[in-house]
Length: 224
Image 1 (cartoon, rainbow, N blue to C red):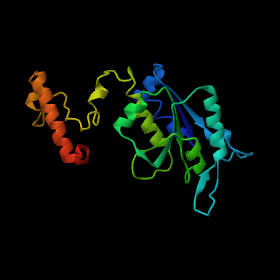
Image 2 (cartoon, helix red, strand yellow; image 1 turned 30 degrees about the vertical axis):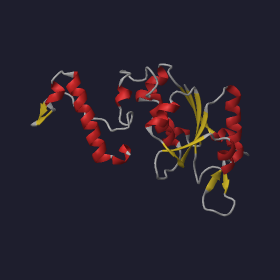
Image 3 (tube, one colour; image 1 turned 60 degrees about the vertical axis):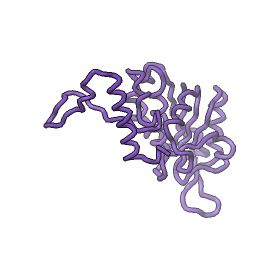
Image 4 (cartoon, rainbow, N blue to C red; image 1 turned 90 degrees about the horizontal axis):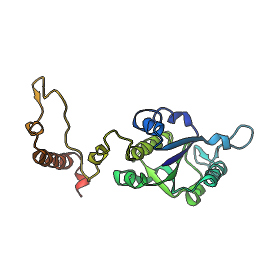
């Protein structure tokens, strides 16, 4: 998989894409992630990428020409399955979307900034808009890092135990069951006996029951 991320502040993506699971996957050659500075396509001597909004609204708007040019140049090098704009009014990211996108070969993620991007970009260049929640952050970089992380961890070989991602919350529409590790007792707090039984069928039944109970208590909307 290859992920190209377009940003006005590429430095914000250095750390989350260089460490832990994503960093290891990149070093192992399982995924290519390239972050592109939109200002390299800025206009004029000051490399401008934004301008005042028509209509007099407050805030600056990312201009259409720099974004068009960088996407044009990227598409000249390879075909892309999706051009994704991280936007608060996009479809809410969930596990099903991550599962779907993890199977793609090449994607572009466009990070918004300022007041947003010229709507013509969304009309003519963007194929999908994704949000990480019903709130606004300062730019699309952190949402882009979250999306990239959610995809990379699903790539075979990215996790030490490839079955681990299959038991994550939301993979089956439920929250995960509680997890425990050694010691079996600490400060009088004990691990449930069933997990110490060594009986896979009993353990699976307990985990299924706990996943359903936790989902019903904490995220009942998932059961609808």
